[in-house]
Length: 151
Image (tube, rainbow, N blue to C red; front, top):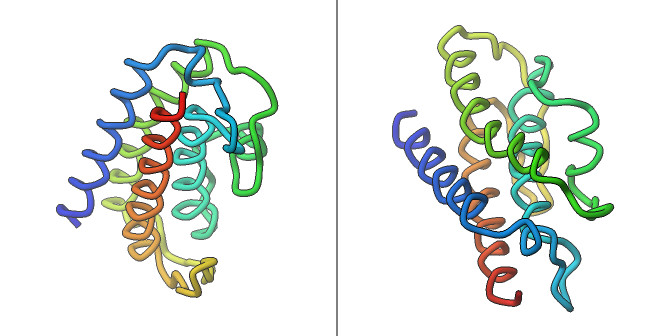
């Protein structure tokens, strides 16, 4: 799990740097031809990790239902976000990884509801969910780069 953890942390470090270096205006901009913005993609990363790892394990998530409803799959930005919201997501990028690692070590993930992805692959346990999450974050990182280029 060390390699997977390292990849996740490296992904998150790059995403955090984008949050810090991108203006609030650009984080909120939806370029022509796109359906969301940089911030939505980053918040979606946070929400999806919690859904894949915690919710499907039947373990309480560490984010609000409001975040889930705003940034889960098939949602779109409902308006501009504030710097306070950016700061919240920035902090969650690290704190949730630390909490997940602690919870893995504590062995709290005992059950898992199988989940078939749109690609046809089925996640059967929390470890597969964590591995897939890296792929998911990589996809959204690529989308973020395309958004930055379009702005």
